[in-house]
Length: 140
Image 1 (cartoon, rainbow, N blue to C red):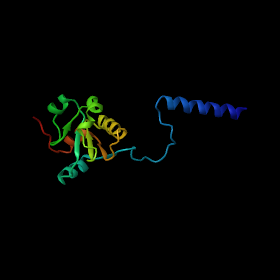
Image 2: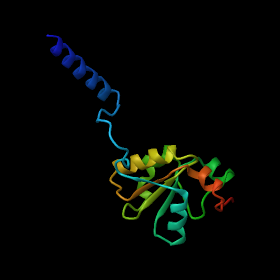
Image 3: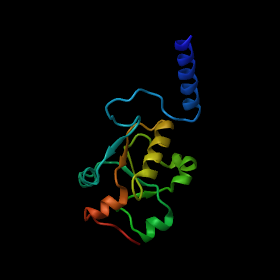
Image 4: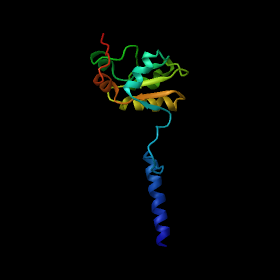
C-alpha cells in the first residue's frame, strides 16, 4: 500500500511539473540544447571573417542596437517582433542570434527552431562578451 501511494505521488508530481512547463527528463551530462548550438564570440568572429553566408540576427531593441552599437552586417529584428517577421529570414542559411547577454538570443533560437529553422546558433555572452573581447562595434 505504501509503495502504491509513493507511485501515485510520483505520477502526480510528474504531471504537475509537465503542466508547468518544467522539463522532467532525467538529469545527465550537459548537452547542446535541442535545435541550436551555443557559440563563443571568438567563433562568431571567425565565421564572419571567413565570410560564411550566415544571417547575424540581433534581437535587442532598436534603442540598444543604435545606442550600444552592434556587429557590422547584423540584421535587427527585436525579439517581440520575431514571430511576425520570421518570413524576412532565409531558413536555408545559418542564423546566428545575438542580444545583450545571450538570454533573448537563446529565446530567439528556440522560437526559430520551433518554426522549422535548422541551422541555428546562439552567441554566448552576447554583445557584452563581443565588446569585452575588444571586437569592433558599429554605431550609426
